[in-house]
Image (cartoon, rainbow, N blue to C red; front, top):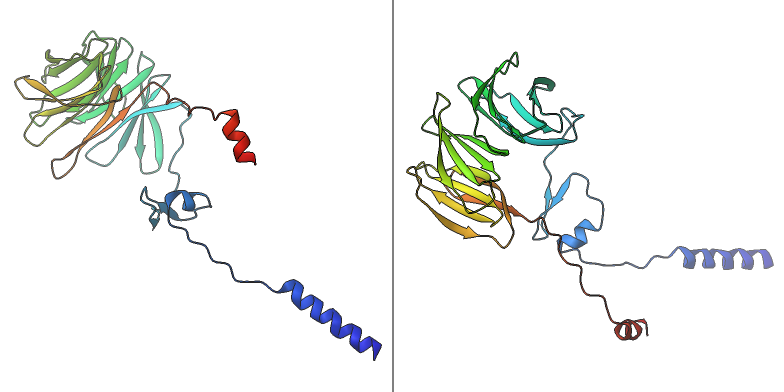
Length: 266
């Protein structure tokens, strides 16, 4: 009888140890979701959980920076890198070096008339490069320190954004260029063409977004609180989107006073 009572008591204790009370919690913000591990899902800025696009690695670079990219009509992609001034072609999953510039940085690449336009910096040029064999000729020399962006326009001309004098050039097929706009900003960092042929141009220094007509007349659309309009995109609806950046790190929040910290510890 004692053994039976002991066995029943042990079973009762074991049942109490392994009993689990239900727990409930609510996950409803981006911070809540990002506190865990996401596998196959993405979190929007509004705290929405969505299925993430599937990704796989296609190719790898040994270069420290990929600075620019463009796509050819046949789907080949071209990438400009630093700090050795290299341009690569991605065809399918094959990454191949096609050109090395005399200058170390390739901030701009564009595709025009079956040739690659490569803008090199510092004190570089816009080269016309054969995308198959890498042979090059000088297309345009703006005689500027930096070539930040190269855009093939609907007119067939080429817009070239430069610094440190903040000049935007328009270049014809013969490689003859003239200043289309001289900005107050130190650099013209980005540009995009609208459907009507006007250009959206982003500056660095003043952080302004300009709209420039075909005749070179311009006005400032927006003055950013940041100091650089780093990228511009015009969508299918004709709406312009701009990404801004700053070279100044945000200030750290003020340190809590010792008195407030003591109260919190209590």
